[in-house]
Length: 346
Image (cartoon, rainbow, N blue to C red; front, side, top):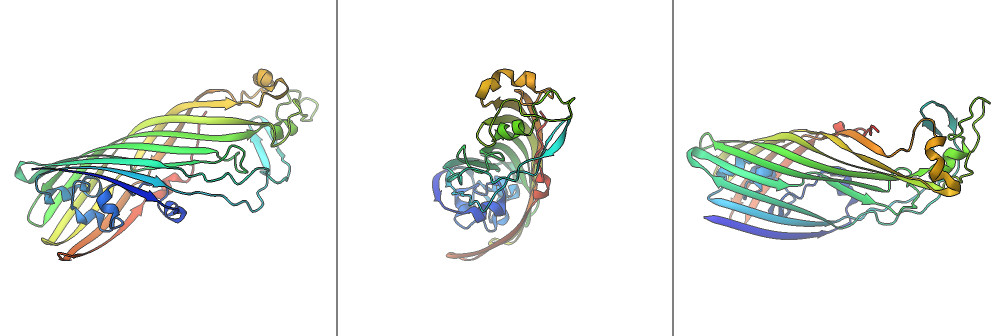
């Protein structure tokens, strides 16, 4: 028997607190699970989406199942400036640091940096002989995109930040006894990222960072660029393939009461891409920039970065009280400590 379920769910919400709590992990991995806020997800095992939440739960499913879901997420992200100021110093290789101006940063609040995002998922489960089950999941476990107005006050730190993942997850499960089931799977994951921000060439020029004549002991302005007015722009784009695994165990106290544990491993990505610098073009700046910068800064070319997407583990409980009522609970740990910093190697 082939069961096909196609679901479309729209979430229109203002939930910055939820986003901060889960980082950029996308919890919306199944439409059915969202109905109960994914409580007990590693033990519920009610449809084919258990491939992601706990592959051991595939042994509870009767017959083939296909689940196709589409989540439409519309977060709202706004910034309130309470007196941002310029950085206290700028570090350029080969040139002694010079304190910058303690001036207030110019720019607006950036508007709503959120947007409308679609998050699809697909799951398939096929029972096999000998207590085995096979499953396949296609989803996006991590993702985030914010884009502020180009002239906002934080433009030197970020304008657009976007990360997308596609996870291909074949899995197997085996019923060892009437009570115990085990599951395991492999994650083949594609990551695509884009980071962009403005560059304050005006302040760099005013502080003399483009002065080639350093023998006089001074750092003089070269182009007459104006701080926070003659901005450039930089955009970094890159992608990567990474690999991981997921494991699960399910113990049934009875036909309607069970406990589940699941683990998804860390996925390490070696991102390779390109950086593109856009120069102000003021006073011939774009034509002489390369010659005026002895350090070879602001040159288009390759860029790389190591990104580790965190592991997670869940412990869940499910109890079916009666036909109308079920009780579910869980606790989930996520390894956010692997993302303390993001280093770009140009």
